[in-house]
Image 1: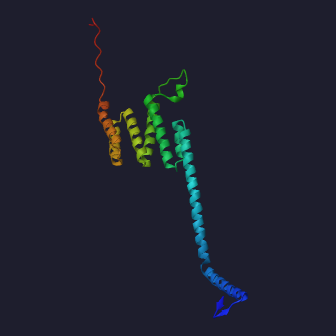
Image 2 (image 1 turned 90 degrees about the vertical axis):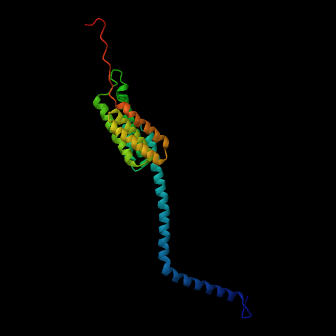
Image 3 (image 1 turned 120 degrees about the horizontal axis):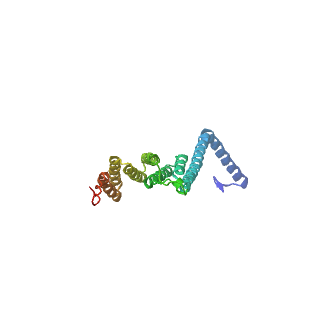
Length: 224
């Protein structure tokens, strides 16, 4: 290598490189003293954010899996209500559990059968008036909780179930109100079939609300 027309030997080249390295180290040290702490903090923040996001995503996915598994394993309205309370932070699973619990209680009331007694040979299958009213009341309360959750599909199903409960308890005005709300919300959500079905069910309420009249029994032949 030539510098000013003079050949440099290996020793001179080594010294030049060593000087360059020392100069770089000197300037790097000055830069590090000024900016090193900020750089380290930035790296730490990025790493914490990355691993925190991974941990949160894994935890959230695990919680969702456990919640839906518990819903599928629940076999009674009471168990479903317990699942909804335990997994309240998983809103979709919690709302679905409440909806299934309400459907189960309403179904028992509609059939007027107490499942716990159905397996007993000598026990009456029909519920008392008080038991049936209690089933409908709890079902209505659960449907209202689902409606408050705000998930459109669950809300429409809950309103339909609530309207059915009101029909069974003779509260036809309340049932009509639910069908009208279903019509409005289903139309807004772009579900015309659900809206038309709610309209038909609302129209049928007029026939259900009519009092049933029985013709008087004919007199027996030869009666005075």
